[in-house]
Length: 248
Ligand SMILES: Nc1nc2c(ncn2[C@@H]2O[C@H](COP(=O)(O)OP(=O)(O)OP(=O)(O)O)[C@@H](O)[C@H]2O)c(=O)[nH]1
Ligand SMILES: [Mg+2]
Image (cartoon, rainbow, N blue to C red; front, side, top):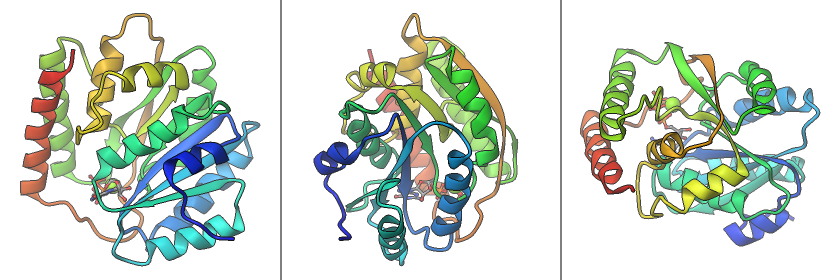
């Protein structure tokens, strides 16, 4: 049977130690290839995994693709279908779903457009054995100067407000131990928009967390088109600063 689960049902369906949270919006051109690439990589590791695929109100055929993959791999893929609320809130829904599961020990967040190369996962996983957070650092990027500048501005803003180096605060390639993620989520209001930056901010300011980083080559999106424009990026920057200034 093919169903799109509610978060509580998705939590109940999680049975593996590694939950992979993917926010997905209009990625019909990418999603099957991206998942095939990631599943091939993860199956070569010894860890049991399940994807939490958060369809963020896609207007293209993404949901049809997701349902097909879910039907083929019901033990590896869980789909949550919901109206559009943006990358941050979609990640948050995935995180909340994962941390409520007793089987989950680790949460990996990656994007769904193929920018996150699964070739780095082995290094993330190896580093996680002695760490609580393993975050990517986008040292090489194929997605253009505007994206690089946006990330730099994000880093400077978060670092100045937090008075600690936030490294690559918005990186969408991050592996977090459930216990530390659950603690950080309690301090980030669900109504926030830019959840990943807020989470980095809280995690970096929490004493005792063991950090590791993996330098990554961030690819260009593997298909489909960019749906982000300058006014939207400016609005996110404002949201981010307002939200970070509210965190304690
Ligand atoms: N643009 C956008 N992406 C979303 C949304 N909800 C979830 N996503 C997903 O969030 C990830 C990041 O969005 P992208 O559009 O790739 O943003 P980006 O990486 O800054 O830009 P490009 O890859 O250059 O298009 C993708 O995996 C999207 O599928 C949303 O409301 N808008
Ligand atoms: Mg992208």
